[in-house]
Length: 355
Image 1 (cartoon, helix red, strand yellow):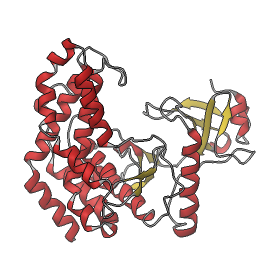
Image 2 (cartoon, rainbow, N blue to C red):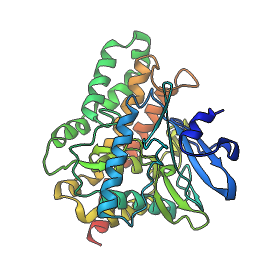
Image 3 (cartoon, rainbow, N blue to C red):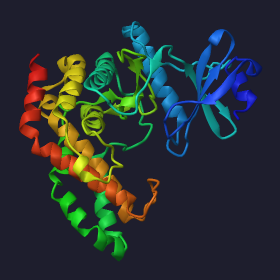
């Protein structure tokens, strides 16, 4: 049970509100507060193991919100409700809590069940990217440093190959070799990350479909949520994560690899939605690497799973001994399916850019 001091810190009377767990997120603890006249708020405890500096999150969101208030006041951006002391978060012992508005008549989905949902979610992420186009990034900091730094992830992968226990190294030998064959994806990232035409932008960095609020019934996009990883990054982070999580009918947990496929109609829906908003702001270099975005994100997630397997499963929770190995194999299969379809998928991108 949340301590009454925490609710009081935001100017509410604890006795007037009921509380229940809310959402399907695995990182922060999230609760729905319901009070008089059906007043509702979202209360969250920040996971300080994942987010070591919660103040960075609060500052990033304050900077972003202030920019939007000045330049795009019509845009729906979920801002923190300040405490009675005027703080963006409330510190209770070693815990950090924040309160945000509850968006009425909204819902979220954990996977894209139809192309309309994929289009609407991608359009919201594209709209947010467009709203932030031109923002000064100098005062923003990374809430998770090196989160999508493929150069670092690839170096960690190579180190894990070198230091893995012999039994795991032998078991994963074939899978390791297959991932190494796609090392050009990491080489491309290294050449792009300092290219001035491959600009830094304010990106969400976690564009799974359940991080967009949709209207109940119609599934029309309302706004983006779960903004803890809003920080400077590259367009391939947000677009790549959508490709990784929207186009396949099964998740990274699927062990029947025959079910893994790239659905062209979902790929087209998300590209159309995203590029309809942000496309006009992209540089030529960014446009040339839109297909690469999917390769980048799938490959990075795959080697992260395999690195963790080689290291003895120290990061991702597992339910059976080969769990991370199978997650990596799942992502490799998805990567191969994506690359096999490059000509028709690139044609989809070209059509969306031209429209």
